[in-house]
Length: 97
Image (cartoon, rainbow, N blue to C red; front, top):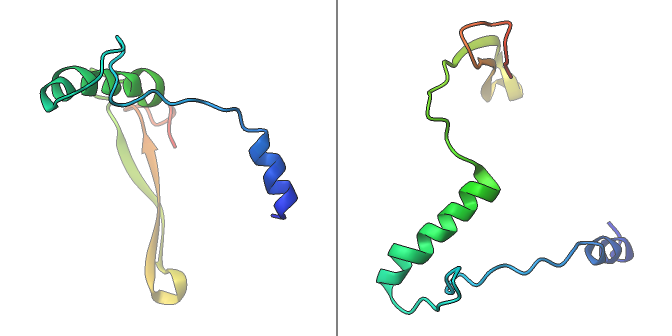
């Protein structure tokens, strides 16, 4: 990528200020380990749950796997390549990847 194109791409990225990790959501500074463990860390973990990763489903999905192909000589014999289908329910016509 040439330098001018890279500069144009970077200049189009919106500025996003990250919150200060050592200031609680109420605006109070975190001054000790107890405040970090009991207040700020749980706040940050909740932000990641709400805005990044989501929550783990309470009901465990009934997933199962099937090897759909195998190549014993992949990479000129240096590896074994397996292609696997993941089924997200007992019904194999349902969601899968």
